[in-house]
Amino acid sequence: MTALTVPDGVLIGHLTPGTDAWEEARAGLCITATEIAAVVGLSPWMSRFTLWHRKAGLRAAPFEMTPAIEWGNRLEDAVALKWQDEHPGFIAAPAGTWKHRERDWQRATPDRLIYPQPADPFDIPEQAEELLEVKTSPMGDEWGPSGTEDGVPIWYRCQVIWQMDTLGLRRTRFGVLVSGHDYREYTVDYDETEAKILRDAAETFLDEVRNGVRPPIDSADDTYKTIRVQPDSFEDVDVEIAADAAARYENAQAASKAAAAELTAAKSVVLDLIGTGRRAVVDGRRIAYRIAKPDGTTKSLNPYKQKEAA
Image (tube, rainbow, N blue to C red; front, side, top):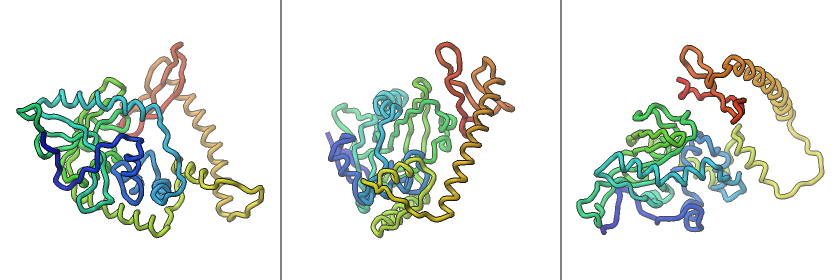
C-alpha cells in the first residue's frame, strides 16, 4: 500500500479529536480550517475576540459538546459512506491532520480525501484528487438547494477554501444530511483570490496575537462568555466606568425589554393566524414554523432564515 500524498500538504498524523496530540497540533500560533471563519468574522460559533484569547494562551469561552455536535460526529461515517455509495469508482478515506508545506502555521483536518477506486483493493493511488466534507443539519435552513455551489454556508466555504489551500487540492465535495433523512450534495471549487484574502487575514491576526493587539468587543455570545471567565477572583469594590458605556448598557436593557415584549406579541399573532397549520407563509415565502408537543399544542415558533425562506 502506497502512502497517500497531496501537492502542498505535509501529514502531521491521524489524530483523535480531543487527545493531547490533536490539541497540540491545533494549539499555538497556527490557524486551522475550523478557525479561519472566526478570523474573518464569519463564524457562527466562535468570535474573533474568543479565538484571539485562545491563541494568546488566555482564558476563553470553553468548548461545549452540544447534541448537534455529538450527533454530527456520530453520523460522519454514515454520511461519508452514503457519498461513496452515490459515487462508485471513488473512495473517501479518512484524511488526518495536515500543515502547508511552506506555511507551518496553516493547518487543516479535512473529513475525507477522495481518490479513484484502485483495481487492486489492497493498493491506494499515490495522490488524492479532491476533498470530502461531511455535515449534518437539524433543519437545513442555512443550506441552499442541493447541487449548488452558492448553497454552501459562507463559514463552511471559508473552511474548505482553507483546506484546499493547505493541501493543494482544487475541489471539495459536500455530503450533507438534513433532518436525519434529507441527503444533499454540493461542490466548491478552489478560488485563489479568496484563498489569498484568508491567508492575509490569518497572518494579520497572528501578528495581532504576537503584538498583544486585542480585537474589539463584539456582540457574539461567546465573546461575552470569554470576558466572563477572565478574572479568577473579585474584590467587593465599586469601579467607576465611562458614562457612554453605562448609557449603552442601560439603553440596551430598556430596548431588550421592549423588543422581547413586542416579539411575544408578534409570535402570538402569527400562531393565532396559523391555527392548526405548520408554517406561516407570505406570498409563497416561509416566515416561521411551529414545533408541536405530542398533545398537539405548540412547543415553540421558530423563524426561517432568509436563505431557507427564499
